[in-house]
Image 1 (tube, rainbow, N blue to C red):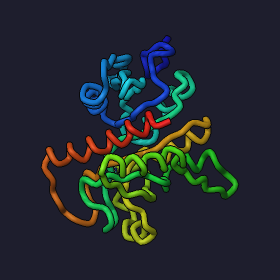
Image 2 (tube, rainbow, N blue to C red):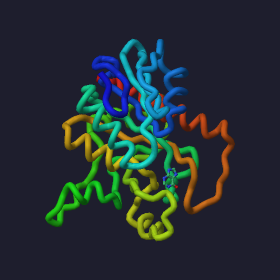
Image 3 (cartoon, protein in one colour):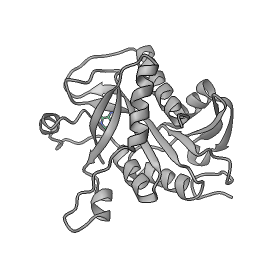
Image 4 (cartoon, helix red, strand yellow):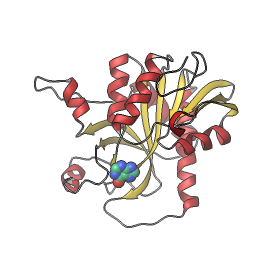
Length: 236
Ligand code: HPA
């Protein structure tokens, strides 16, 4: 069996999955964090792997960039493969003084300019895409257990990376921590299909300061985020 975008049989994909945008990050996570990873798909070079973490089956799958792309993978993972717990592990642009480069953020909610959310809810309703509370509270506990630090709050999921109209000052004044491009769609689909989702990020760039970090420092922040996601994925 295969869906239009994932070349896996039922049972090849674990109930728990990490979702980086970049397929090569999926490969990196599979090879460096999972035991006995097996690749189950390479359609469009969007790689997916299943292995184990501390003995528990866990998958990791690229999603591409943006809400239309992640929505395709998340829809098929939930509807066709029965995935139950989904963790986005991505990067974001910091837009708040509380947030520094390399920090780990966890999205309690995802504001958005996406038509996808607006089009599902008419009648003047603005659906609030939020994290699953159980995963969020467990992730916060795991951050402490691992001796790490993470900031929890609202992010904004935008449709345009190059958005010259975005009012960053206003968003910052309402406490929005960072900008990224997938979390609102992930949270919306998780609510629609009654599964659990959480989005975690490392801050890869910053809209209000020009700090520069080395590739090595970026990798450390990325690895911390992956550990938090994996510990939370197997935390029943
Ligand atoms: N904008 C949107 N998405 C992003 C950014 C950004 O600055 N950085 C990482 N993902």
